[in-house]
Image (cartoon, rainbow, N blue to C red; front, side):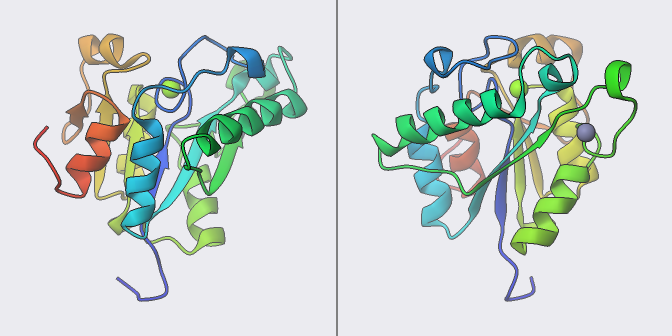
Length: 187
Ligand SMILES: [Mg+2]
Ligand SMILES: [Zn+2]
């Protein structure tokens, strides 16, 4: 890996970082999943960036706006700060094909990965993706991540029932995925 480039943990948001409540847009409904603060701190302890990549089609559907989404992110940072943890950046896709037409950023497309990689100086081949839907895992694979994890939180169990792309690594949650990636424990 080029010495100037860093590895990143690319993280889906809903169902991975916070509880999946469908079109989350209220700070008061923002609830951290267990082990997330520890996972973020472990990512940082290894010199990796923690980058959230989230499809937010609720914006295309006019269910909420960017300001409301940002209030959720501020609440997430507040909840994490209480556990001395944080994430480094958030990239979001506000589109949906039925409402705004196709876009290059909605997972499983890799637009958000490409933008983060460019702006933050990330080496995708040293990086990993963690998500709860097929589109997350597919995006991670297409973006050239070393490992793409599917977690059993959020929609993970429903996704697993449908089958996941070859090469997907399945773990219970974000913390177990991060531990697996850094070789700290068994799955
Ligand atoms: Mg999700
Ligand atoms: Zn998009």
